[in-house]
Length: 263
Ligand code: CIR
Image (cartoon, rainbow, N blue to C red; front, side, top):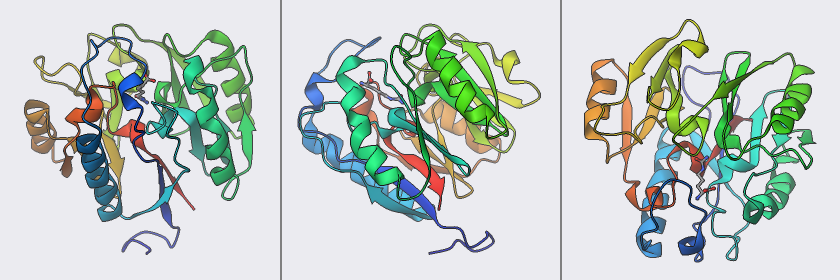
């Protein structure tokens, strides 16, 4: 349904069911803890309801029961009005996740692909206006940044590589939480590279708290970071809280579980 006050474009969110194999997920910075699949699925369902409440229609990608990290669809594609870029995930166990996403996205956009030996995860890509900031993480290499820049350059976007340390992806360290406002963990990324934006820092006791998903005028945000949530609310941000601590054990956060675009 079109959102009041917006144009008639439809807002879509691609999601995917939590795999029964999520216990075998990739991990980079966290110690492996047992993941309760039923609880993770219940939290994921609450996340999908939040997306719908924010105006998105859910497009569910095919189930991938043998792919532990398949719920984290953000890493497989980046979508803009001009087209979609299919990523080349940096963890070899994740590359097959892209095939079903191409099938789905090609109904909505022309798809361009990144080819090996380039690697790039969608979690490393943060768009602010016509600039893509791309994290140079363990998942995204120089070739990945270059191929991505060549594709989106044709569509009029600029790419800025960004150093990121201490976390999985650029968007573990920084996300946009409102028009011209970024939420940052300053230990993991230097906020000055993002230009003239307002910078809000995470509470020092909540180092994983920099990931929020702005959608439909609200911010979908995990309920396990109450101190940073308080800061967001004080800044006038309309926070839509969701339970997300089970998928956080797999190093997942709220942007990771969807690909949002206008149809
Ligand atoms: C991985 O290591 O690839 C997954 N366990 C977590 C991916 C989270 N994705 C994201 O932040 N965009």
